[in-house]
Image: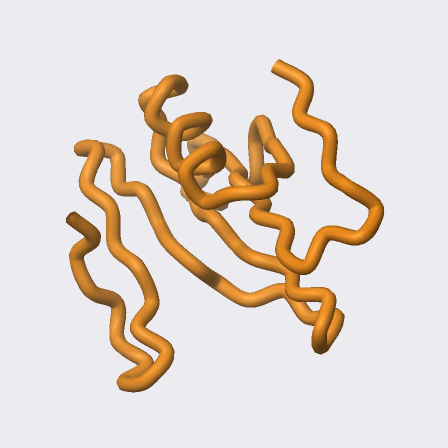
Length: 89
């Protein structure tokens, strides 16, 4: 599925699959850029794999952690006020 990111997008979500080698090192597998978190979440849910979603913001040109999907399908998101990872409904 090809998703077009507008040139003037304010936010871009990056969903990346987390893979592990036999020696325990982790690396990124398949990736997708999305304009909404819903699309990024759907990408990882459809694959059925653990992964991370990060967000790039045009206002500060930085990429920050946003949410994580565990192997069991549960999601956690980063609470910016407390700095803690919390379950996502």
